[in-house]
Length: 73
Image 1 (cartoon, rainbow, N blue to C red):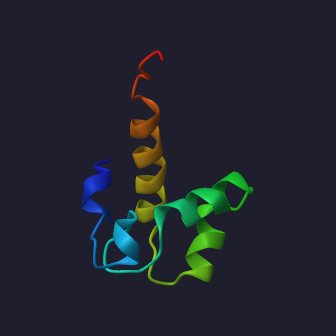
Image 2 (cartoon, rainbow, N blue to C red):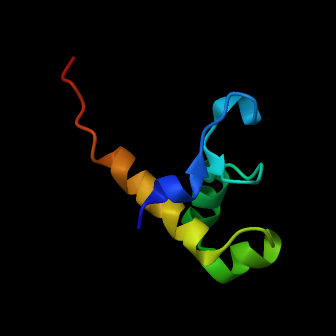
C-alpha cells in the first residue's frame, strides 16, 4: 500500500490538511471514525466517494507518521 496514491495535501484545500485525493475528506476524520470503532464499510456508506483502499491508505499514513522518532528535549 502506497498511501501517496490516495492522500494529498494541497494548500488550496482545507488549508493543506491531508485529504483523500479528489475529495475534501480529511484523513483525520477517517482516522477518527476508525478510532471510534467504525469499519471501512460504514465509512464508505457515509462518504460514497471513499474506497476501502482510501481507508487503508489513511491507516498506512498514520503508521508512517508513528514511525518518526521523537528528539529528546
